[in-house]
Amino acid sequence: KNEVEQSPQNLTAQEGEFITINCSYSVGISALHWLQQHPGGGIVSLFMLSSGKKKHGRLIATINIQEKHSSLHITASHPRDSAVYICAVEGGSQGNLIFGKGTKLSVKP
Amino acid sequence: EPEVTQTPSHQVTQMGQEVILRCVPISNHLYFYWYRQILGQKVEFLVSFYNNEISEKSEIFDDQFSVERPDGSNFTLKIRSTKLEDSAMYFCAPKAGRNSPLHFGNGTRLTVT
Figure (tube, rainbow over the protein chains, first blue to last red):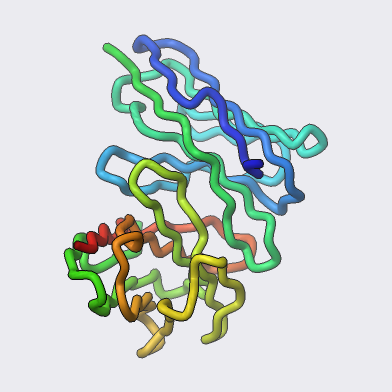
């Protein structure tokens, strides 16, 4: 059983649409990370959160610790948002991450 | 913003050869992590390193793997005798403190033939 589950696996949207990507986890965590992976393979950290909600530009991340669930929202989506979005949880004592399989987002113009 | 640099960006090697992957962290990074991603699969934890010693390692990190900080700045991952299944993207991801965000390096794509 995967400790970190993301949905959907693939998502196609039209430019301007509001997008939600979900992440559920089954282990105790100290923090949850949302990451963005571009087609070339590079990974960029978007958010690190342990409670509540964070916002950066058009991106919003929320987490519900009791329900072991997090969401990443993208408002006014744009083709440049096309990427794989990865949820990863920090559960071990040494800070290493357990990754989800990622959500591949494609935003069409 | 300063970047975490990994070299080489792409390495092709023959099975059985040794490879060394290098990571240059930002100067205040104290915690170091190596992850790998086999093509089409999710990212997996390999090893964490703090205070000049391994703090945790996964079952993937067997005797063929080793890590060190040879000069106090660079952070290296060595694979002694590469196998075909070692072909993957390897990411270094250091951070400054236990509760600090991660900074992923640009990755090294290792191809074992």
